[in-house]
Image (cartoon, rainbow over all chains, first blue to last red; front, side, top):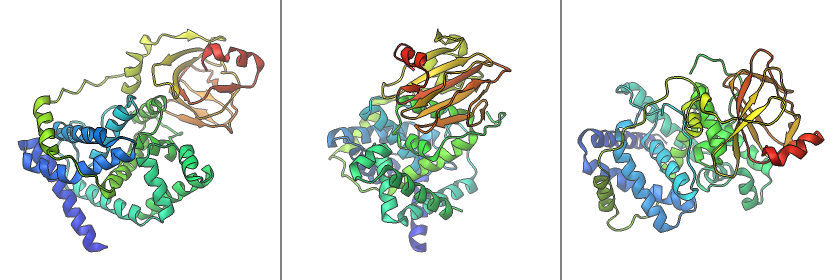
Length: 186
Length: 216
């Protein structure tokens, strides 16, 4: 487990540095690295949410362009690069696939704040890795339901219809998964 | 917005669905308004967003088209400088709610629904309905049950029902199991934001007749 975690932590710090280079120097090489890693993931996320390949390609390009334009709003003491990109992709999904607006809480968490403390950045990136490991370690049945909740644009009762599982089972498996994750993050 | 003490918070299921982007617009509006008032739920939302990030990180990949990176760089060059972010409100209702009202409380177009109770339906997608409710001090909303889920967020004043007392920032999550009669605190008029994904079910005959007209 340990070597993987160290490698991933280094990767996370790299992504944070890449976004900073886009913000400070419009660095296209840094953007190309982020693009190579995240764009195919965003495209897969959008296709699992119901977009066809053409729409997913277009939206994934827009998501990555938004990353460039909003690089100054990224706060690595509050989110990993993957989390920030997830929120951009999710908003694009609601807009493009569901044709709805997304009301956001005021004072966006990554709003114009002073340069974050480096210790906070490291702690947050480390926690993000821990969470990823904890999700990977969930029992298969629980993990699948969490993935469906995030990826497939289905409510719990629609997941019940699709999987044939009773609604109560779905709710209790998700609750068990969250309990495990909370325990792992202590 | 940490000067008020909030006792009733969002459920994990609602936060997760909001983070995943799977709530109807009316529910998202209510969740976003509560989070604007509640630092605890804002932090919990951060954890659910981090789960989304972890999902994207461990997601399978689908190859981007040939020339995709260059096409994206062209989008970036064509878009130019990002638009400046809108100035944030200084006081009054939370910003997401003001965006739907088109201003603060004084801009709400109230309609009377009888017994001093007033409502204003906000423009959202049809999958669920969001409305502002004005309940005069000491008055009651008729006893009702729910077919789906009802979220009630107190913006001003307070109400009491069979469950507890709900003050500013508190949110009540009601489902099929709850029949309740919210009564506004005697001290002040109560203003709430309520979201429902199915028509409410009133227990008395008169309110049920009125239901199609009130769009409750």
